[in-house]
Length: 116
Image 1 (cartoon, rainbow, N blue to C red):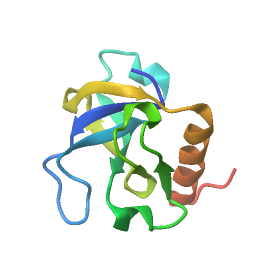
Image 2: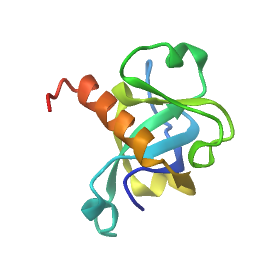
Image 3: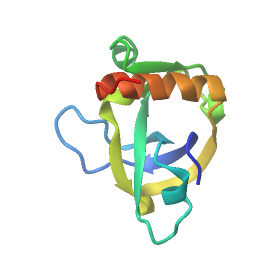
Image 4: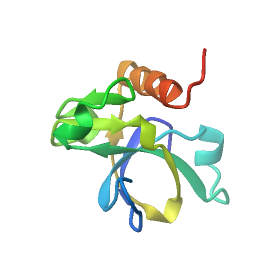
């Protein structure tokens, strides 16, 4: 498991406006954590196909159909970054290209108000 890979994940249970259900997520945690089996927590960014989510501004990044194994046009919802137990991850879809991963990271910094 590596930063930038997309996996199917089970995001239930969740509440309110959080992304829920089985959906793709982008692995964002540091590879040192990701590759340590005893480290159970994985930081992820949910992916959505919702047109409403796609219009949410600078914390949402477009992922064209075919990107990293995604079948449909999707969006990385960086303002909903979350931590999951790795047992909630299922099949690997693919790896984001470096240019899109850089856009996701910039959106995550904006969501968290971290200046670089």
